[in-house]
Amino acid sequence: MQRVSNRRRFLELAAMGVATTVIAAACAPASVSSPTQAPAAAGSPAPTQPAAATATQAPSAAAPTPTSAPAPAAGATATPSGFGKFTAQPVTAPPGYTPATGKLEIFSWWTSGGEVEALNYLYGDFKALNPQCEIVNSAITGGTASGGNMKAVLQTRMMGGDPPESFQIHLGHELFDSYVVAGKMEPLDTLYADEGYDKVFPKMLIELASYQGKPYSVPCNIHRTNVLWYNTAMLKDIGAEPPTTWDELLAIAEKLKAKGVGALGLAESSPGPSAQLFESILMGHSFLGPAGYRGLFTGETSWSDPKITDALNLLAKLIPYFNPDYLSVSWGDINDLMINRKVAMMVMGDWTPGVLWSKGFNDFGWADPPDGKGIYAFTSDSFGLPKGVKNRQAAINWLKVCGSKHGQEGFNFYKGSIPARTDADMSQYTDYHKSANKLWTDPKTEIVGSIVHGVAAKPSFNVDFQTAINVFVTKKDVAAAREALLKAAKDAGFKT
Ligand code: GAL
Image (cartoon, rainbow, N blue to C red; front, side):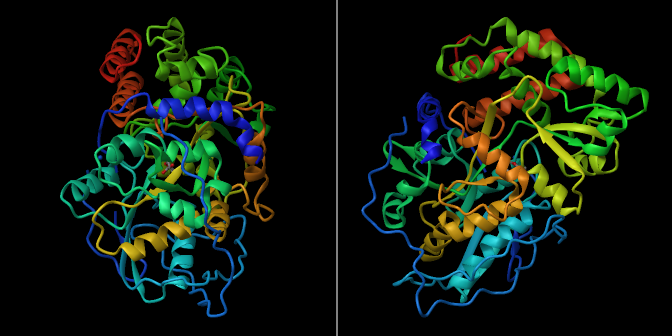
């Protein structure tokens, strides 16, 4: 209920979700039982109908027992979680549950610490409920932009009429403009009704999952994408508090530079992280502010706004304080730089604690990003149902696990995000999760959709945006970056 109090902002976001309808492409493998193909490397909604159906948490007498923890995804290392394990009651099937047989193939880009444990938790639930069904975990690691490699392989499969049973996709434009508008996904109104999702998901998330009045995916979480993470000991060593303004950050950065360490970690071996930092700057109170940032996608803010140039100038000032090898460091490795005291801070999403915990590292803190107090940029990971899947029963049963209270409680504990469901029990969660949940549910919080993580703008713009900022942190040419952003905005039909 509390979450729905942000409804006005939710509607603004939903409006962003339908502002454009141009199509672009979006979105891997290891098997919990046995891996299949090796991944190739590559790249207004209306509310849903009220559900008449009942929720499905009631245990049945014949409930299957949970399996042991499934194996990690191919290519990922099984790592201990620094903060412990989630204790769950055995998952139970509702009356009338039809277990699936055959195979369930799931695409995602979750191959890092935290992500793997979270995904395996969901697989554990699925396996317990569907013991005769083999899970094929087609997870493909990173790449250009979030999930780029997976997205490219998935697109080939989708366009070739060979979809997996389900795949990870962000709510909002990434979902609509990749496969929904193209008619490649099944609407999930019956599932939403059967599972009573309209009673347990915030209205905004349902709207961001819905196109022309019907939902097309099931959200599993809410990630905050603009958090300042810091190595507690490193800031303590120089007597610094987490910076609340960019000037404070620059002052701390000078002190750290004098000690020969990077202030701000950036993993720009491929585009994405610098653009994420830039969107955080852009939405900050001293630049466009949350309302101005939202306006970039609704036609209320022009992409010619001088504040965008100011934001580029600030980003240029930060570059000398990145880890010097920022153009060759990958997202997986940047976390090690922070653990090993090579960089003191990072502006990154809250999948970061999942990675740090999985490496057994707990000596980190978090804060609003500089200039971003009370602004919650977000994304939501979800799963949908492609048309023409080989095993529809398995796909439906998977979506039910993703949307379930049992599934979301354990999944988000490992992932660092908060559950999409409003009825999840977070009592085992860390202080970080609880602080994120508090901010998300505070009616004063300014919630905005992330560009880089798929919510705010269509995939083609997202790619252009990330490329423009990647070139900028390489060449440091403000005028050229300005031009590239304007061209991207024009191509996307935004106000320039
Ligand atoms: C985001 C995604 C998160 C996490 C992150 C880093 O786009 O929503 O779940 O996986 O990428 O991989």
